[in-house]
Length: 86
Length: 149
Image (cartoon, rainbow over all chains, first blue to last red; front, side, top):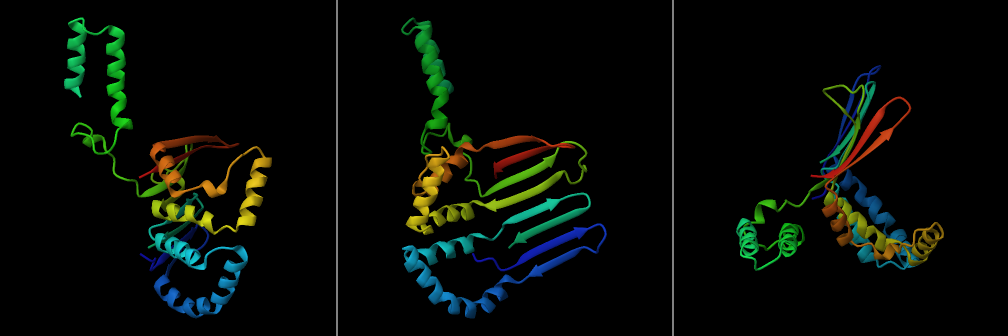
Protein backbone atom coordinates (compact mmCIF):
# COMPACT_ATOMS: atom_id res chain seq x y z
CA UNK A 1 0.00 0.00 0.00
CA UNK A 2 1.20 3.50 -0.76
CA UNK A 3 2.22 5.46 2.33
CA UNK A 4 -0.51 7.94 3.21
CA UNK A 5 1.08 9.86 6.08
CA UNK A 6 4.40 10.58 7.73
CA UNK A 7 5.04 11.66 11.27
CA UNK A 8 8.13 13.71 11.97
CA UNK A 9 8.98 14.47 15.55
CA UNK A 10 11.82 16.67 16.77
CA UNK A 11 12.52 17.21 20.45
CA UNK A 12 15.09 19.60 21.74
CA UNK A 13 15.71 20.57 25.35
CA UNK A 14 16.01 24.25 24.53
CA UNK A 15 13.04 24.51 22.18
CA UNK A 16 9.45 23.39 22.13
CA UNK A 17 8.94 19.87 20.76
CA UNK A 18 7.85 19.80 17.16
CA UNK A 19 5.55 17.12 15.80
CA UNK A 20 4.59 17.21 12.15
CA UNK A 21 2.01 15.09 10.43
CA UNK A 22 2.51 15.16 6.68
CA UNK A 23 -0.48 13.90 4.68
CA UNK A 24 1.42 12.06 1.97
CA UNK A 25 -1.80 11.08 0.20
CA UNK A 26 -2.38 14.76 -0.48
CA UNK A 27 1.24 15.22 -1.47
CA UNK A 28 0.93 12.48 -4.12
CA UNK A 29 -2.03 14.29 -5.67
CA UNK A 30 -0.10 17.58 -5.68
CA UNK A 31 2.91 15.86 -7.23
CA UNK A 32 0.95 14.35 -10.12
CA UNK A 33 1.40 17.40 -12.44
CA UNK A 34 5.14 17.42 -11.65
CA UNK A 35 5.34 13.72 -12.53
CA UNK A 36 3.53 14.40 -15.81
CA UNK A 37 6.00 17.19 -16.58
CA UNK A 38 9.02 15.05 -15.74
CA UNK A 39 7.81 12.02 -17.69
CA UNK A 40 9.58 12.95 -20.99
CA UNK A 41 12.84 13.56 -19.07
CA UNK A 42 12.43 10.18 -17.38
CA UNK A 43 11.82 8.44 -20.71
CA UNK A 44 14.90 10.06 -22.28
CA UNK A 45 17.00 9.09 -19.26
CA UNK A 46 15.77 5.50 -19.60
CA UNK A 47 16.66 5.45 -23.31
CA UNK A 48 20.15 6.84 -22.65
CA UNK A 49 20.75 4.39 -19.80
CA UNK A 50 19.39 1.46 -21.84
CA UNK A 51 16.83 0.66 -19.14
CA UNK A 52 13.32 -0.49 -20.07
CA UNK A 53 11.04 2.39 -18.95
CA UNK A 54 8.19 0.10 -17.89
CA UNK A 55 10.56 -1.96 -15.76
CA UNK A 56 11.93 1.23 -14.17
CA UNK A 57 8.41 2.44 -13.38
CA UNK A 58 7.51 -0.95 -11.90
CA UNK A 59 10.57 -0.96 -9.63
CA UNK A 60 10.04 2.62 -8.46
CA UNK A 61 6.34 1.92 -7.86
CA UNK A 62 7.22 -1.14 -5.79
CA UNK A 63 9.68 0.85 -3.69
CA UNK A 64 7.09 3.57 -3.10
CA UNK A 65 4.54 0.96 -2.07
CA UNK A 66 6.98 -0.69 0.31
CA UNK A 67 7.77 2.48 2.21
CA UNK A 68 4.92 2.23 4.69
CA UNK A 69 5.76 1.24 8.25
CA UNK A 70 9.33 2.46 7.94
CA UNK A 71 10.67 3.93 11.14
CA UNK A 72 13.81 5.84 11.95
CA UNK A 73 14.68 7.48 15.23
CA UNK A 74 17.71 9.00 16.89
CA UNK A 75 17.61 9.57 20.63
CA UNK A 76 20.07 11.59 22.60
CA UNK A 77 19.49 13.02 26.07
CA UNK A 78 19.39 16.57 24.69
CA UNK A 79 17.91 15.86 21.27
CA UNK A 80 15.68 13.34 19.61
CA UNK A 81 14.43 12.95 16.08
CA UNK A 82 12.09 10.40 14.59
CA UNK A 83 10.38 9.70 11.30
CA UNK A 84 7.60 7.20 10.92
CA UNK A 85 5.94 6.52 7.59
CA UNK A 86 2.42 5.12 7.66
CA UNK B 1 12.67 -37.62 16.55
CA UNK B 2 12.92 -39.39 19.90
CA UNK B 3 11.62 -42.55 18.27
CA UNK B 4 14.44 -42.50 15.71
CA UNK B 5 17.00 -41.87 18.40
CA UNK B 6 15.68 -44.78 20.49
CA UNK B 7 15.83 -47.07 17.45
CA UNK B 8 19.46 -46.13 16.86
CA UNK B 9 20.29 -46.83 20.50
CA UNK B 10 18.49 -50.19 20.28
CA UNK B 11 20.53 -51.10 17.20
CA UNK B 12 23.67 -50.14 19.10
CA UNK B 13 22.63 -52.23 22.11
CA UNK B 14 21.92 -55.21 19.86
CA UNK B 15 25.38 -54.80 18.37
CA UNK B 16 24.02 -54.31 14.85
CA UNK B 17 25.82 -50.98 14.50
CA UNK B 18 29.03 -49.66 16.03
CA UNK B 19 29.22 -46.70 18.44
CA UNK B 20 30.79 -44.64 15.63
CA UNK B 21 27.89 -45.36 13.30
CA UNK B 22 25.37 -44.55 16.04
CA UNK B 23 27.07 -41.23 16.69
CA UNK B 24 27.01 -40.36 12.99
CA UNK B 25 23.32 -41.26 12.71
CA UNK B 26 22.38 -39.19 15.75
CA UNK B 27 24.29 -36.15 14.51
CA UNK B 28 22.58 -36.54 11.12
CA UNK B 29 19.22 -36.57 12.91
CA UNK B 30 20.12 -33.39 14.78
CA UNK B 31 21.08 -31.61 11.57
CA UNK B 32 17.90 -32.69 9.76
CA UNK B 33 15.47 -29.93 10.94
CA UNK B 34 17.82 -27.10 9.91
CA UNK B 35 18.49 -28.38 6.40
CA UNK B 36 15.18 -30.08 5.72
CA UNK B 37 12.30 -28.77 3.66
CA UNK B 38 9.40 -26.89 5.28
CA UNK B 39 7.05 -29.77 4.42
CA UNK B 40 8.58 -32.10 6.98
CA UNK B 41 6.62 -34.08 9.51
CA UNK B 42 4.86 -32.70 12.57
CA UNK B 43 8.07 -32.95 14.65
CA UNK B 44 9.65 -30.02 12.78
CA UNK B 45 6.57 -27.76 12.65
CA UNK B 46 7.07 -26.11 16.09
CA UNK B 47 10.55 -25.02 14.97
CA UNK B 48 9.27 -23.33 11.79
CA UNK B 49 9.69 -19.59 12.24
CA UNK B 50 7.39 -17.02 10.64
CA UNK B 51 8.89 -14.99 7.83
CA UNK B 52 10.47 -11.82 9.21
CA UNK B 53 8.66 -8.58 8.31
CA UNK B 54 11.22 -6.02 9.39
CA UNK B 55 14.95 -5.54 9.55
CA UNK B 56 15.80 -3.71 12.72
CA UNK B 57 19.01 -1.89 13.56
CA UNK B 58 19.40 -0.76 17.15
CA UNK B 59 22.29 1.24 18.50
CA UNK B 60 22.34 1.01 22.26
CA UNK B 61 24.58 2.70 24.75
CA UNK B 62 26.02 0.16 27.16
CA UNK B 63 27.02 2.72 29.77
CA UNK B 64 25.19 5.72 31.09
CA UNK B 65 21.99 5.06 29.20
CA UNK B 66 18.66 6.24 30.49
CA UNK B 67 16.81 3.18 31.79
CA UNK B 68 13.51 4.19 30.14
CA UNK B 69 15.05 4.83 26.71
CA UNK B 70 18.23 2.86 26.19
CA UNK B 71 18.39 2.97 22.38
CA UNK B 72 20.27 5.75 20.62
CA UNK B 73 19.32 4.86 17.09
CA UNK B 74 16.37 2.75 16.09
CA UNK B 75 15.79 1.89 12.45
CA UNK B 76 12.99 -0.39 11.31
CA UNK B 77 12.91 -1.14 7.62
CA UNK B 78 10.20 -3.34 6.11
CA UNK B 79 11.67 -6.40 4.41
CA UNK B 80 9.52 -5.69 1.34
CA UNK B 81 11.35 -2.36 0.96
CA UNK B 82 14.69 -4.16 1.02
CA UNK B 83 13.44 -6.67 -1.54
CA UNK B 84 12.27 -3.84 -3.78
CA UNK B 85 15.56 -2.03 -3.18
CA UNK B 86 17.55 -5.00 -4.45
CA UNK B 87 15.67 -4.66 -7.73
CA UNK B 88 17.06 -1.13 -8.08
CA UNK B 89 20.31 -2.77 -9.22
CA UNK B 90 18.57 -3.69 -12.47
CA UNK B 91 18.04 0.04 -13.14
CA UNK B 92 21.75 0.83 -13.10
CA UNK B 93 22.84 1.44 -16.71
CA UNK B 94 25.17 -1.23 -18.10
CA UNK B 95 28.09 1.21 -18.53
CA UNK B 96 27.79 2.40 -14.92
CA UNK B 97 27.49 -1.19 -13.68
CA UNK B 98 30.67 -2.19 -15.54
CA UNK B 99 32.41 0.85 -14.08
CA UNK B 100 31.34 -0.08 -10.52
CA UNK B 101 32.27 -3.74 -11.03
CA UNK B 102 35.70 -2.69 -12.31
CA UNK B 103 36.27 -0.38 -9.33
CA UNK B 104 35.23 -3.15 -6.94
CA UNK B 105 37.59 -5.60 -8.63
CA UNK B 106 40.46 -3.10 -8.42
CA UNK B 107 39.87 -2.82 -4.67
CA UNK B 108 39.95 -6.57 -4.18
CA UNK B 109 36.21 -7.22 -4.21
CA UNK B 110 35.53 -9.41 -7.24
CA UNK B 111 31.79 -8.86 -7.22
CA UNK B 112 29.31 -8.56 -10.07
CA UNK B 113 26.41 -6.22 -9.25
CA UNK B 114 24.20 -7.86 -11.86
CA UNK B 115 24.31 -11.06 -9.84
CA UNK B 116 22.47 -9.52 -6.87
CA UNK B 117 19.00 -10.98 -6.69
CA UNK B 118 16.18 -10.79 -4.09
CA UNK B 119 16.85 -14.47 -3.31
CA UNK B 120 20.31 -13.48 -2.01
CA UNK B 121 18.61 -11.22 0.49
CA UNK B 122 16.45 -14.12 1.71
CA UNK B 123 19.60 -16.19 2.23
CA UNK B 124 21.18 -13.41 4.30
CA UNK B 125 18.01 -12.97 6.35
CA UNK B 126 17.88 -16.72 7.02
CA UNK B 127 21.38 -16.53 8.47
CA UNK B 128 20.84 -13.25 10.28
CA UNK B 129 19.49 -14.41 13.63
CA UNK B 130 20.82 -11.61 15.78
CA UNK B 131 24.01 -9.84 14.87
CA UNK B 132 25.64 -7.78 17.59
CA UNK B 133 28.63 -5.52 17.06
CA UNK B 134 30.33 -3.85 20.01
CA UNK B 135 31.75 -0.44 19.19
CA UNK B 136 34.21 1.16 21.60
CA UNK B 137 34.23 4.93 21.36
CA UNK B 138 36.31 7.40 23.34
CA UNK B 139 33.74 8.06 26.03
CA UNK B 140 31.18 5.33 25.75
CA UNK B 141 30.64 1.78 24.68
CA UNK B 142 28.01 1.29 22.03
CA UNK B 143 26.33 -1.91 20.97
CA UNK B 144 24.91 -2.24 17.45
CA UNK B 145 22.28 -4.94 17.06
CA UNK B 146 21.00 -6.02 13.66
CA UNK B 147 18.15 -8.49 13.60
CA UNK B 148 14.96 -9.45 11.83
CA UNK B 149 11.55 -9.49 13.48
